Amino acid sequence: MPQANRQIVLDQLPQGKLAADHFRLIEGEIPQPAEGEALIRTRYVSLDAANRAWMQGATYRSALDAGQVMAGGALGEVVDSRDPSLKPGDLVWGDVGWQEYASLPARRLSKLPAMEPLTHLLSVYGVAGLTAYFGLLECGRPKPGETVVVSAAAGAVGSIVGQIAKIRGCRAIGIAGGEEKGRWLTDELGFDAAVDYKAGDFKKRLREAVPNGIDVYFDNVGGAVFEACLFGMNTFGRIACCGAVSQYDQAAPQHGPRGVPGLIVTKRLSVRGFIVSDFADRNDQALADLQSWVQSGQLKVQEDVIDGLENLPSALVGLLAGENRGKRMVKV
Ligand code: NDP
Image (cartoon, rainbow, N blue to C red; front, top):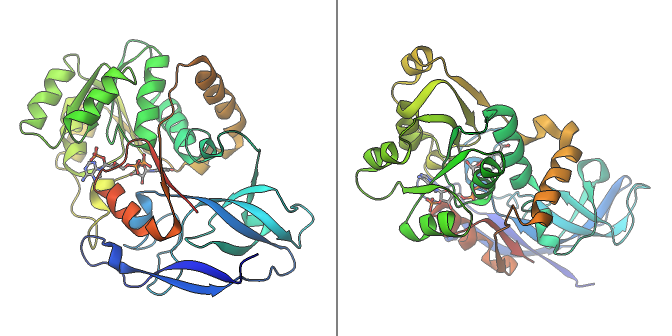
């Protein structure tokens, strides 16, 4: 085993846009596990837009402080254990952080099955797949023939949302940045249409893409895109509020979309926020469905794997700028 533990520290909290030089690479010690803990060797770190939101303040987890090892979900392998529930070789998921080794309480780690490729445990069978599944089916409640619109459609969650909408007999429209992502959504993933929110006349093009209005909007981005979709909603439509990536990469979230109270009332909309762990007691059913769709070829999995712990900062900055297609992660 190596002597040093390479770690990436969040050196300063960003006041505006996040940059790679807000982080610093250091070498720490490999921590010995205490009673009830396991020593984990990191294999893949998940890159999430929410990593940036944690720097703005407390969310569903406490806020990050300057000087701490950057937090983040990761897939790791147990190398030593002082808890009877885990043994060397076990694969686990937890908030391991941006480092090669961490000792964590076994109760904060979830054991994962071995599978090929391992990366699917972070994408379709991980947070992204479960978020898409529960957010769409439980909060969006789409019916066959309805129109489902999803933003950040070429990202980890959105690319799965649109495909599940198609599997459920809906019309799927993806909103994503750039023509190339749009073509990929329609030509490779089977979306019915894609709308580039970065090009001019976005609202007009969105209206044209949804001639029968929007029944379900799966919101990954908030802000102006949320606002445009809100105006296109049909009466009794459902909005699944999953995240607000357009609001993360700044000192604090800006004001929300205009028209929220009035339109929600007059259109009788149901708007539901959720965190994927709300549905954890039904993960087995979700995973069984996701697995059968992947095996039948109805659900395509897109992953964006970058090599090397030292590349984590630029990988996160790039994700916020829309570099990724599908689930971005870093192999350590
Ligand atoms: P990804 O990390 O895969 O992709 C993020 C994408 O967002 C980028 O590729 C970019 O694509 C797009 N984006 C960036 N800035 C903007 C902007 N200003 N306006 C519109 N789009 C933008 O995303 P995930 O699929 O992992 O996450 C999607 C959302 O789901 C996030 O808000 C995240 O926080 C949330 N989430 C919520 C969970 C929950 O339990 N509620 C769990 C997991 C994720 P483009 O080129 O299209 O701009």
